[in-house]
Image 1: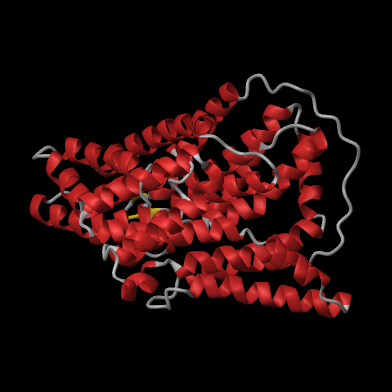
Image 2 (image 1 turned 135 degrees about the horizontal axis):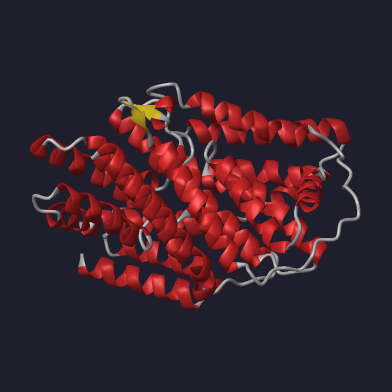
Length: 421
């Protein structure tokens, strides 16, 4: 356990201070874990979240066609028409991303919306850093609103036998959706303050031309299929990833038939962010090694025992302890570990398990917004900015991530307590 913790901390330090070598740091640490036996080699394939990687890869291909179709530029023009200044554009884009993220994976949301933000910033000749980071953080925030918005939501739904509508209304009370939306509303004043100096007026010169609607139709179809898939029980773990990959193949074939050449496919494959995919691949292996070393079990036990006999203290420890842990550790293995722990606590104490489940989801999902590697959506957003020539520092990310996290978590924390305690 000690060796695993030391290597993990060293990897994290490298990721913070040498952002250009994030991928190498994660992959190198994963290799060391396997060499030292912290993560047995034969268990490595099962440690990787192939569903997430497949979703990302497939969505990246479709999004590349989406960008080339001119639709992001058209959406950018519409938002520019509705906005009085740069600050309002950022707020609209963040809320737009949050709305989409409630129904599809956070990473897919960033891949869809961030190109729109980049297109807007190019028109305005300003840095896209603040806007893209706000989109990533908002995507991560609202991913917990529905059953299909985030991997942790899917895990909770499967574990507690919840369906899509239970996140809206369950046992006669409002569900997770409303707590998350309250947090989203509370982030608007935060953005008004953070971007208070971005008052440059918007000048608009017309709407961009849309070349084809096929990528847009496929993206909408992807959202519908992902929602529909959530209603099926005992489906393969890679169902969502297969949907995204299949639609990517359909997009490539449709473009090749229409254009009678493969230039679009080659462009899309070159547009895939392989560095981000490999970074996540390495992190999945490292986190599994840390999990097998007993670190996450130890943290889960500490949180479970810290609450004592007070329901409020236990709930508070679960929420804010999860925020702290998820800022540094991927929330998927943490949530997987904590769900059975919370079920046991509920059985012993008589506490409504939904109070603990929703508290866990609030803290674990939103806590990733504190750091640039705390959530896959953040990693993706930072990766997009890097490809545009902007390296995001830890303090630069924290300037946006920490206020978003504190306000959103506080809103959800209080609402869930008053509704479910």
